[in-house]
Length: 579
Image (cartoon, rainbow, N blue to C red):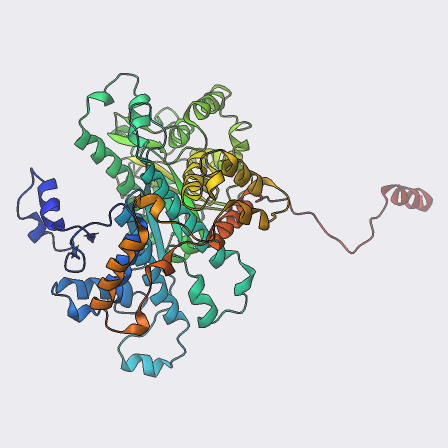
């Protein structure tokens, strides 16, 4: 499903596919286009609050009143029917740019609408007979939703990035952390009911972060200089492939073992207990909050595929270097000429030059993680999900599987949950995807965008242009106690959208509110544009979330006993007396 607030989305999609058959939109029945131009023919003006407001209008307008007949079915699939028997979809991915007005504003509003609909169903106390009479029985199987958020370039000596992109992305991150804090950590939601849970919803279970700097790092890391000669369209195609590959790996990890060749595990010598099926429930429990992706893949030659007559785990035939594969997955983004794919980490833990030095130390010292694991990105990670995708009949030894586990244990010392999925026969190459949960919010890029937004749209006038807010937010995160009132001295009660728009917010607001009243006649449903501004409480909740992740630790389980310890010396004495 493709959607934009701007006009002529279908024409732009058709033009972007030049070289293909002109009828591909007509022939590709599974592709649905959200033509929303009848609600708003222009974009959101690079302002997320306007994108969010327009999304509210679109979602609240009666679907029967749309001239575009497809919208009724799209709305039903995405919002109304999630979780019922008629809609078997359990995984949803929202892919959008965080720097734009439409993407960062509309995507989260659509996600919230879906979650609102789903949560309403989970608290619905109608009997099964009543539900059956409406032909909408609710199947209580958790759905897993993920935002895939493309973050803007932050520091590029060759490209001057618009500050508005940083502010827009920062608003989305601040909003999501606040919502995630309310849903997952706030102690106010212990008595769960429809009245107190619905206001605490967040748009997605997880928000995967992918830096737009991927292609820049790939070019910088291309020692042969080949990347700089690749045209822009090819670079975008490679970046899109990086994103789609992660979705593909997550989707294929849903497969049950009966989908595989029944002789595979016997031939490859893999214990079935070493793999799990990553269904929506596994993802729901394993992945929450901000998520980063580590990815690498290797070409598998014919000589490495097992046959009935081949000896299993012949060391001479095995050319897979699992150490190198894991290293490439956490490396700075780079282009793999063998596989024609972008590999590496989706968002850098720290500034690129410093990270490069830490990686060199890691590799030079035989993959000693003593330096890397001190980075908050790795040290404070609460859960990881690793998906290993293998070609059919590929021989994966226990040694390789154990090496992978060893690298994950060494690099992520404080994870409370590690999940592994083995996907067989889904791709020609061997690939490794590691999903890193929560701790990416402590990365340099994330905090930079977060603070840029707060400084620009919340800071009081005397703090807007110096580094006071930057330093104080770091202090708020690190300090043993969070003196919340200190935030009040620095920041205003509401965000000021005019700081993004650079125009009179109070002149623009009535224009959009008039559109709302005209398209939705029910006054009870009216929402003012002011009502969706982020507040100081959103900022405080986001800081609470960052403090929680910053303090994540685990400790070894100590043996506790009610028995008194028996002295060895006493035993020796008794034994001697008996002699």
